[in-house]
Length: 238
Image (cartoon, rainbow, N blue to C red):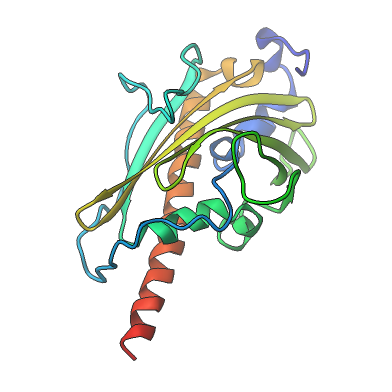
């Protein structure tokens, strides 16, 4: 841990650096499903209706789970959100699974380094970075996240955990993803919790930032998956 107490955080530049980043908190504790895993062959419907805005709840009554395990039940900072993506499940799953390609569709991610080989599975891990821009209180720096897959069920759910560490900053994240076929595509639902002195110093602000980060991730995933699905549809009807 950083060794900084909650009562100290308001008098340091760390809090300013942390809360200047709406995307960072939504990217913590990240890992993914097996690279190359293929979902079921759900047909793509090019103009089927789908949700344009994520639905969300900061304090849902029941946690999302993957193989019976959910987010941290004692965490003060938590958020759940979801959206419908008009693309095949296999396309959406592969985007999440191919972690080394995340920078190609998620601008906040700079680098990804696998710490093991082969398809991701329970116990697999990787290290990745995202930048923290400069602000009046702190210089530019980088946040390093080491992620470990804890539970996974192909084409259904993923749960990962891991610390995010920056200059004077440490946050522990637990993140669950669920993938469910629905009319018009696939509903992707995600829930994440954060613990640590920095975020617990201002729970409402940290929760707001987490919400913005998760919704940005879903928008990027939706955009990337639907673009791929549309391209394949057009190629098939050329």
